[in-house]
Amino acid sequence: MSSQDNEQVPFLEAPPIEEEDTRQAIDEAQDRVRRAFGKVLKAARTSRSMSQQSLADSAGADRSYLSMLERGLQQPTLAMLLRISKALSTEPEKLVTATLERLEAEDASASAPQADRQAA
Image 1 (cartoon, helix red, strand yellow):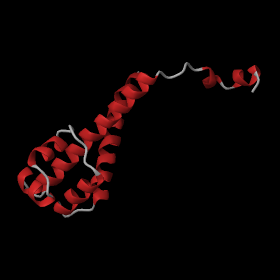
Image 2 (image 1 turned 90 degrees about the vertical axis):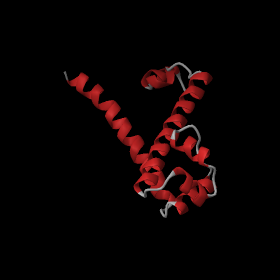
Image 3 (image 1 turned 60 degrees about the vertical axis):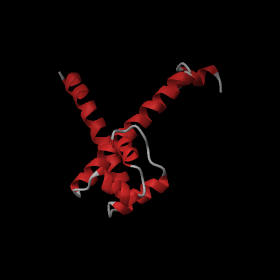
Image 4 (image 1 turned 135 degrees about the vertical axis):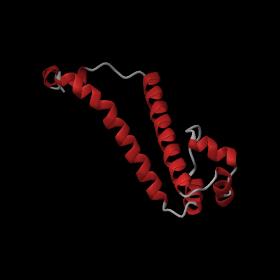
């Protein structure tokens, strides 16, 4: 590629992303997903009038582990997601879809104030 080509594609001149910045961005994204899943899990459990203990017993998990899931401090393995889904009498994809929808709603509400400020 010639230097003239670089002038036509300005993003090629962008500074390299630092490895630490990348790790931090990944960690922040994982935290967001864990917190969103935790809110979805708690809503699914409480909508069925289940206690953490009853869900834990049905899913074969420890109650403190479910508490950590709901608070976004842990993320479930695929096997645990399947067991929790079965204990909640729902499909695992419903929990995943609800988590994605929550993340999209958070993104939309976070960008709305920026759009309002730019329009002003």
